[in-house]
Length: 532
Image 1 (cartoon, rainbow, N blue to C red):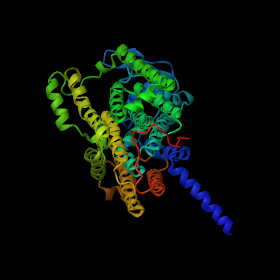
Image 2: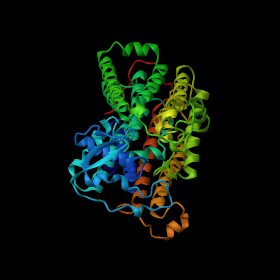
Image 3: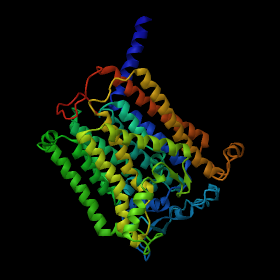
Image 4: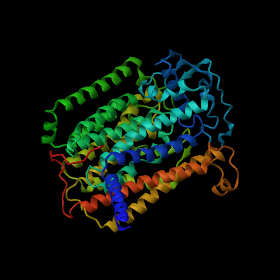
């Protein structure tokens, strides 16, 4: 009996050790948890219930059938493609768009007719890579609703993998207690909302996080399996470059931040290796291909016409964006067609976590780490005003908070890494104190994520103008497959898993490290850690 109990304890210890190391089991568990939370958003959102999702659905279905652009129309940036009739009607689905008092039961009957029909999409000129990845399910079924849901879930699965990879990288980039907190701070409800939609924003954000963290793993020299991380760099970088028109610009911010963070000696050592040069060539080819597509299609010059076009000058637009819109609500959460803001609790929580992370990093980081966070902050603050000023005369005010969400994620992650990798940062806080912080912050973040999803469900089921008490009393006019309670429970369980992983990693790092053991930022001697 004693032997059996010891065997059980040993087995549990091995599992916990594996989870705290950032290796293969951590990757699989975190991937599954992030995907489940993203899937909850995908399944609880009515068809076409995110900004421009019908256009992205039509584009994906067209690319899957070999139509990379389609036929140009007289409308700016709009092309016409031939896709199954059911999917061609996507533009009529969001009858509730822009009015959060209208429930989703107004959605017209969904057609499953496979016959091809013409459809217009404002995403026709966009790079086809993302759409090729997520559009395949529309070829495999004639069920329109099933096709859209599987397209969403495919997008969520891909994005979740890169976010999970980023989480594993963070566990070896200094103190996991701090980097894990940075991960929870960076992944706002808006990230998961976009993960659960057919929208290339999700791929841009996830690959941006993976590119940043995998590059930092390499320049820190904190792994023996560097070629595996070079594969992550190449894959995430190539896909990020193809995600959206501005993605190469955000990649430049990531590259600049990493170069400032890295030591000269480590960079010189990396640049003597052939596998690093192969990776750089692949990245260069991916960015060049993205640039060639933008130049060929004129994507950045064909963005439509919005308020302010022809009446607002570049200087006015720059100042307006910098002063009044530098931290847009869409960074934390504006769901639906920009008609359903996240609850005030979520705005307060993630604003405190995000701003607190950056302020702390600016206060305690020094040298290269301080320079790195400064570069990321400058990119996050200045790219939106610069881009809006350059396009305002022709297109008007087109910028939305989600366009800079990748910059926000990169900024918060770099801030947490800068603090966590500081050799003078206290590294042996009491386990009891750490445990309480994990429970408090993890609990608040979990509540915030579930509350955000519940807010969206309420909006579609009974309308945002109904009180929460009335919403609990009445039967919703629209509900997702399986009912809203099921998916709220799934989202809560997924968040609990992520928080538990953070807690296990924090406890494992604190228990295994001597109280005064500093972590070298510039060491070129790899540690015995790996992704797998």
